[in-house]
Length: 338
Image (spheres, helix red, strand yellow):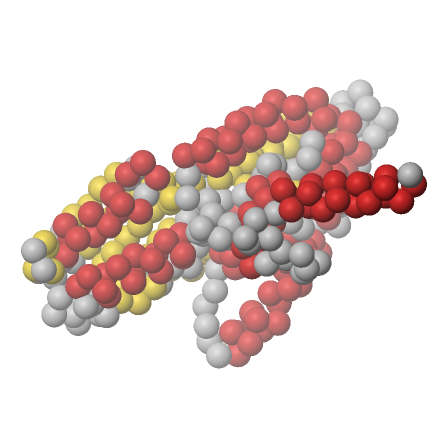
């Protein structure tokens, strides 16, 4: 009786196993390539449920500290940001950033710490300086950490000289910006904070006050992030012909002009064919409000550089053009036609 029961149990178990399987059943503990890709996509989907942020001091704050310099390169003004020195000039900056990071983390946001990422790229910058390579530290930070949002911080602690108790008041601005477009998504400005508080240090005052504004701020950010996931991130795309090139964008490429070939490619490779052409000449074509997918088919992060790389392949294959991918920032695709 007992043997019969065990036999029936074994047969039943085998039937269940066989019914769950298929021709592609993998009985190994090691996942197949297809299973690994599915797990990766699921993992990326979970990771993308909340955006990542990086808190940085604003340009206005850097300028007050003498950590922002303007460089004029043939009429084009660029900014050189010395983030590392800002921590030396303001000993409280590190702790204020940590306080804001902590409050965002409590809402489920992923964090990319600016100071740690600065250390990661310091060796590369030192080598580039020796070789005379100019770099934009902000772009370098964004490309290294790839946060979804930049949280710009500006604050100023003022002392009332007429106060017998050395009264201090804090004014601060927290601005959340889309890393791809630099557009402000949400912001909060608070003034005269701490007038009646026993706390006189900036991190303490921020801790007391910022939590009251965080809910609305984070809600605006997550709403915007949801739109990006549904409708694609927004970038710009520029294709320009080099001065010494014999190519013009109105040259023929098969049965279309090069410009028409580019526009056809844009229609097929943007989210819902969403883009705005704002410039179209024989040497340059420029698009804004270009919506691209947030991830590639393998679930990897997809940026302006990746988009430019795919467009470069399309131009090379479709028109036989020699093209350089000069994209540097996360949100501005730039190709040069030789």
